[in-house]
Length: 229
Image 1 (cartoon, rainbow, N blue to C red):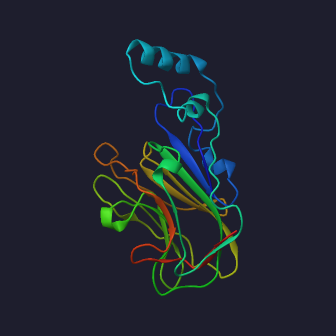
Image 2: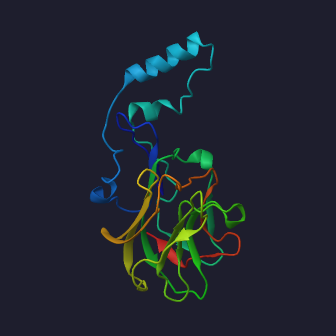
Image 3: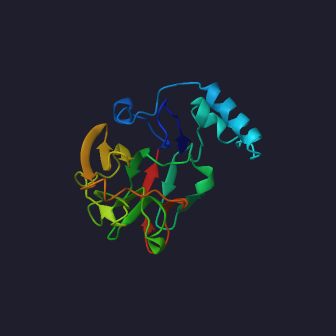
């Protein structure tokens, strides 16, 4: 799994891409204006001068790559990994790029068997704290994609996407969510397969969170029986 971030001129928020062992589809990711290279040394100098004059701490070294527009990647899964009923993987919030506007998660995935229960692929947060942005489950029996996210009005906004997954077939999934657009798009093999929109982005906003990103078996949910390839 890789985490990456790029920031464009004039974008005051932050957007990220998590790639879980797979290909990033350029046409998919281009819906978010976060992938143009830019170098703004003036911004960095201004931060340093402002910190000095105001007697504030200097900006953290962790902030400079964002200002420079560099592509930050955190490798978590770099070899084919099988997730079974009891398998889990957890990535702390501090190890992931900051997200405030948009997030895209891409993974290459092969289903090993169906399950009678919901199978978790990933979830940032846990149900105990009522946060689910981003989350992707497989539905019972059919293994249909079941993505979820949280808003200021509903912690469990969800939908079912596509047909039943075929055992042994390799898929590319992309979960792309934008707080600015108030919309989640789900792609299967590069084709838009489903979406969910917030009815009124003025009164209801998509909520990101500071919880770890968990993959596989946590709480009452077993891991989806799959291979991340």
